[in-house]
Structure formats: C-alpha cells, structure tokens
Image (cartoon, rainbow, N blue to C red; front, side, top):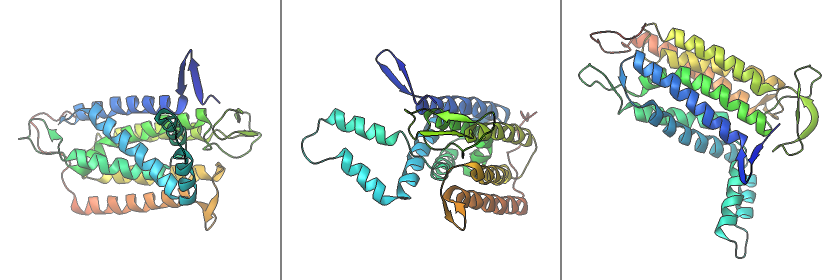
Length: 283
C-alpha cells in the first residue's frame, strides 16, 4: 500500500487525497440531485461543511472509544519542556491522520446536513425551505458513493481497516510503511465496500426519481448501508467487543433499526416530498 506520495519536497497522505476525491464525487452527485429536484443551494458548500463535520466526528468517536489512548497521545504531543510550535503541529497531524470511526462521522454529517437544510430553498416555490429531512434524502446517493471512494483511502494508507488473513487471489499486502503494517496477505475489504456503495448509490438515485414520502429515502439508505457494513465486518480485523460483534457491527445494527423506524414514520406521515412546481425537473 502507499500511505504517502512523495513529489520532491511535497509529502502527501493518500488518505487525505482520497477524502478529497470522495468530496469531489459527492459534490457532483449532490449538485445533479439539486438540479433535478429544483433546489437552490450550493452543493460544494454543503459537502465542504459535511466533510469537516464528518472528519471531526469520526475522529472524536474513534478516540472516545479508548480515552486512555487519547490521553496518552495528547500527552505525547504536549510533552513537558519547550517544544517548537511547528513540531507540535507535526505531531498533531501525525496523530490525526489515522483512526476514524464511520459511525461518528455519519452522525456528525447527518447533523450538519440537517442544519444546512434549514437554509436551502426550492426554486419557483415561493422560497419554501428544503428542510433537514429533505436535505438528507437529497444527499443519500452522494453519501453512498462518497463513502465508498473514501474507503479506498483507508486501504491505500493501510490504516488497519483491511480484512483478515486470506489466500484469495485478490488479497493484498500491507507494506512496512503502512500506518498499521502486517506481513500477511489480507482481504481488501475497502474494495468490497466501494463496489457495494456504487450499487447502493445507483439504486438510491433511481429511487429518488419517485415521489417518495419525506425521509423514506434516508431510511432506506440507513437500512441498506447498515446491512452492508454489518456483513463486511465478518472479514475485517476489528476486535469483537459485544456478544461476538465488533463496535462497527453494533453501530450498523443501530443504523438498520433507525432506518426501519424512519421508513415506518415516513410512510405513516406520507408527507409530500416537494412543493408543487410549475415544471417538475425530476425525470
């Protein structure tokens, strides 16, 4: 794997590069969804804020799972004695570049999307606001494909999100300079997630053409993505903590349950997804 790309004096982390690519892909998909649904909002600004919130949330969730490790890392960064501010910044960036929890990022991203939905408005509908739940529906396909692309960054950096030891012909090696190296041939679980996410994004895009109740598409995303995350954990190296399940599997089950409840509530309310427009752009 290639955790870093060196271009002369420039030292680029592949995780950051793939996170940027995930944001670009997500922005394109979200922009197209805004256009076809007649939404007056800047997809780039929306995605930028979600990425920032998601990264902070994912890092916070990961670190709070082990407060002792977090305290040790912070003590190392702020070691006793004089330390140049630039050296402290380098230590901080090195600590921050690995160790992210999908569930924490998802929660922070959802909160940011709902907050931005309060400001977004429909075109030609007397300025009616999109609202938080409609914004989640709009972002579902973009979130699915963006997650898949971002996972390849985890694979390239070798940050420990790879799979168990394998003899399969498509197994991969983690180089010695990977963030979490291993001498074994392992399953490329992020590739599985990319393929799953691409199919899920396409399916959500097609579902978005229908006049579903507000929140139903978000519920379907939570259910299907949660199932995918639960299944991939069986071939991942994450430790089993709860009843033989990893922390990610417990969170995935929570996603499935939350999605099922949201679908039920959405169908019961049967709220109209969009205001009546002169020309419905959805095709």
